[in-house]
Amino acid sequence: MTSLAVTAPPLRRLFQEIDEAARPQSEALAALREQWERGRGDRLFPRPDDAKAWAAQPWAFSLAVQPGRSFAFMDLGVRARAILCAGGADRRESPARRMAVRLRRLAETVVSRGEPLRAWADAAGPSREGVEWLVLPLSSDGVRVDAVVGAIALGQPAPSRRGRGGKTPAQTDEPLLFALNASQAFGRSLADALGLALAAHEERDFEDGEHKARPLCDVAGRTAVLVQSLHGDDAQSVNDKLCRMLFFTGALKDSGARRVLLVAPYLCYARKDRRTKLHDPVTTRYLGQLFEAMGADGIATVEVHNQAAFENAFRIPKLHVEQTGALLPYLLRIASGDKLAVVSPDSGGMKRAEALRLALEDATRQPVSKAFMEKQRSMGQVWGDLFAGDVAGRTAVIVDDMISTGGSMARTAEECRRRGAARVICAAAHGLFAEGAPALFASPVDRIAVTDTVELPSALRRAPPGNLDVIGVAPTVAASLSPWLG
Image (cartoon, rainbow, N blue to C red; front, top):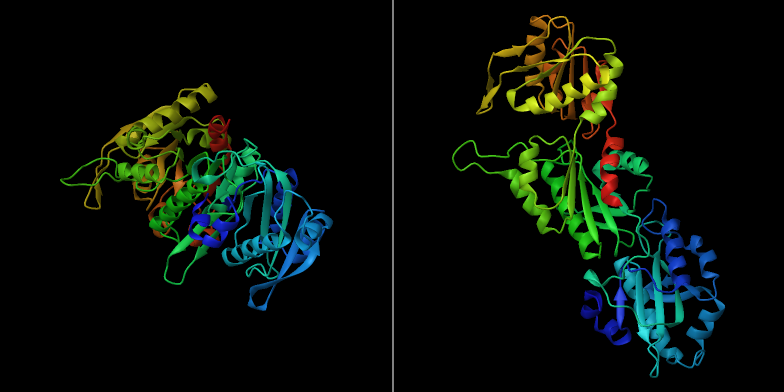
């Protein structure tokens, strides 16, 4: 019995089991639930007119909500009429009066909560067979529930033992892919690459700044993939997005999801992965503990700042998607035939630069040189003038995990030009472009390439610079994620 039944005595007396999202055992009721899901489209609830065809089924009924929350029949299937309006339709079933009370209680709860309900009650007598109920909300305006549609199935066996959250294991192994509103564009791209449709969910903001999010489909027994890129933008801060992702993860687990796999194309707080000063926080590790506490079963991200620190911070399975797979085809296209050099803007990024250099060398069958720029940072100040490597006469590809203010890229680009580079290309997975990164766009850079893990700031979307290219990384993420999904 679910917590809903425990906290509602009238329902507890009438039903043995009540679930908010479980798939019905009856094939007819399961088909009605699927019709309701399809009928919603981009609304929270289908319209009452949409439900007329469904209610024509023999076991189905639909009710309109009257003033004072009484109910009036709109459509009533033949068998449903016999059961609900006359006693003795089935000798195992309780009298019609008790059936009507059950229906009214379920309908009241569905209207007040705006949630589908599936319920089960024992039949009269020694048989363990019973009656399964399904009641689903409808809305004329898409917001206020003003009707319900439902169905009943007689002779259903007693429900099987429930798993976590009181849910019945789902009948399909196909994963559900959710993308929170702030990452819908990336979510759609990932869904296309995986051959899936985005699952429906609701996000609601309250006047005091709080919010809630919930799945609008049955996740019980399913693998749920949750997409949210954790960067700040004009609408939501980093912390806003992180909080929403944590809460939605918890909601999926509470709803009975078998696995919840997180896809954070940009992972926040990953730069502070070690202590450099007394009493420094190690926020990457704290982030891992938060997601583990919410019940996440795995996390995938693109080009994290320090892969070793990421591996150590998360104890759940993790998937690190390198940016090389997305950047390589782009670089081969725009620098075809050029002599190349891969440059790291600091010594800490040499492994990342080396991975790209080897990939370019293997693809072009030509030697690719390497170089790096010295960078030291403390108290917000950056310094260091040492430059090692040969870029003269070459196309210098400066590669990093992210472009924030663009200062490191700009100073490296200027040094490459000073040392004779023929062209300069800046490439990174994450284009944060804090405050528009004016220093970078004013520097002697021929092309700037980032992936779409982070949506461009509004100023750059309105007037994108002519030398800025955005590369879709969803196919690369999908290819890496597919083995996890089975």
